[in-house]
Image (cartoon, rainbow, N blue to C red; front, side, top):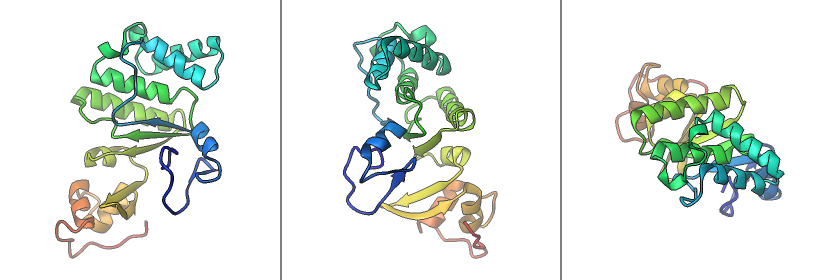
Length: 209
């Protein structure tokens, strides 16, 4: 819904200052989206994918080619530019997916489980990339994940959704202190306490979130 792919069923939301209901085109201009399943064409090269994406965002041919080179350099794809997307490894395809989503320099980047199925090295690289997007490019990254260590390591603000309902939100440290009883509690134990799947520590002190 937040990326305008589904019509909202209720409520209201804004993305990068654009109202979801009244300005969906503004939302699409402001955000990038990487689906869990990806969206590359296995029959064409990495370069063609990136240039085509640029053209879809109405860049001139020379601009699209230049942007493709920039993205390839930033995401470690330069040596793969002329390789068909279908010949890429899983980690390389995910980098290409992210590069395509960054073509128009979005203010908000939606990543749906970006490290699912990746080996530890590729996962660490993906974490570094997400941090760079936030810190160097000032991009807001809206990330969904089932890996609680990932949420703990990357989140400035964490929202816990259980059975379709938001049950808690705040910084990882605040949630761990409030529900886990200690800032040193694991986010796994904190999640279990929040969702009622384990006993909430009796001495857990509530804090402002």
